[in-house]
Length: 150
Image 1: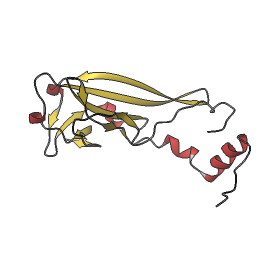
Image 2: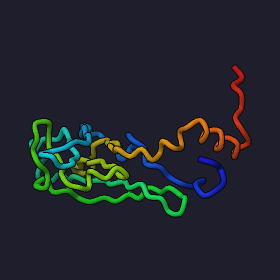
Image 3: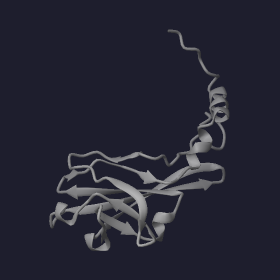
């Protein structure tokens, strides 16, 4: 991102952004379909959950305000009854998971412990900032690229 200008303090939704760090096993997650509907499919099995455990769904939404990209984050508790059992594990199913400007992470919480999770997303908005042209423009705003001296 350039040092100055309309996108200088923007934020971008990136695949594999960390959401939580904890000691519980990672809940592997990916985007897919269940019975023809968009879904967040996890490796979580019903037997992995204790009665007092919680599931927190973090939703990250890439928005553009004026020219400035921002990521808006929300969180909601998921009742395991909302999830559908699949061969691979439990899944959250719904149209929201078809949104290509959003990403999700389902965090397993047990007492004070949680799972380490990263965002899964189909969002590609960030890619326009990864081109050679974008690098050169951003570097110029910081005084240019330096040469390696090794």
